[in-house]
Image (tube, rainbow, N blue to C red):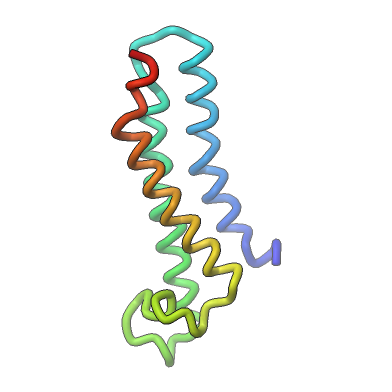
Length: 109
């Protein structure tokens, strides 16, 4: 399972690490740049990339069954359980990243 999810793990790391680092940086050092807010955009970017990768995986795995990109994700018939969880997680990354991107400066004002 770990071998087939290398790209997923890497994209998740790229989405979460900047947020954790910038949160630490913003609380530790006083500045007016609000790196947490900026890192929210990276979380959205990598969350969308992860979702796109999942849709490509579904398209490749069941190319004869899928008529539209992401159709298997909606029906859930051909997607393995791990891929379903990763797809939900990628959408959650995009939603949380958007929230951080929009409101990430408020705790520091």
